[in-house]
Image 1 (spheres, helix red, strand yellow):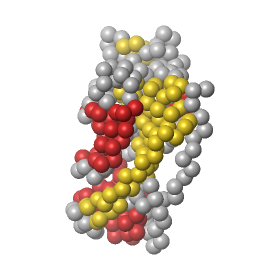
Image 2 (cartoon, helix red, strand yellow):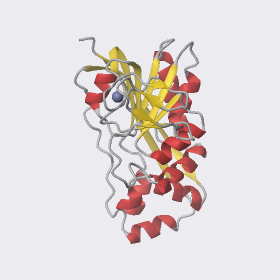
Image 3 (cartoon, helix red, strand yellow):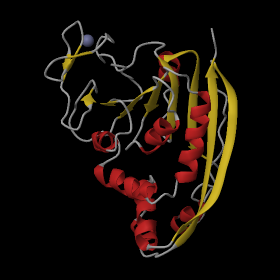
Length: 271
Ligand SMILES: [Zn+2]
């Protein structure tokens, strides 16, 4: 397995019953959906995106609104992926981008591992066959050995830079998609009195060299109230918006809205 034991970081072997077990005897059951739960603490409650959010995003993505991003992201990954390499989707959600990258990287021996902290999301990723291995795990404690990954991808997930650096091989690739200035501006204009554009942050990453920066920008035409609703429900605005703003958004039956992304590609420094 690509994933390692989250407790001791030892190699995991699959037992006859399907469980993953390390030499220290830590054991993890395989869920019937095909993923392993490698979260260290199960404090109860739901981790990460809840079911409604995951479902809204699944619906929105399957309508193809972010397809231009997915296909561009995947072709950049395909240019950089090495035969026999390991690709990790850190915070894969329901595997929409994972699958796009996996399909684009049809090189000999490329293996893809995906994890997310949301069980509901990982279940969907496993269902669509987005990767070779799936785990429920968090970005701040990745169940991966040091220097074991050739390419880490991150689409709109919290960035745990130290962990990305730890698991990547020297010279390995880190690809990240983030919202750019005008992303969803028209939606925000419906929600807030004074909508703000996203602020472009500092793109330098200590220990990495930026080797690619690409903007992707287009208008999305949402022409049903369902489409508007799915977009709204999958964003953090869904739980940050007051009742009034929420009602305003949910009463719309169409919206033309900006999609604006930045794809950043880095190479981990050799030493
Ligand atoms: Zn262990």
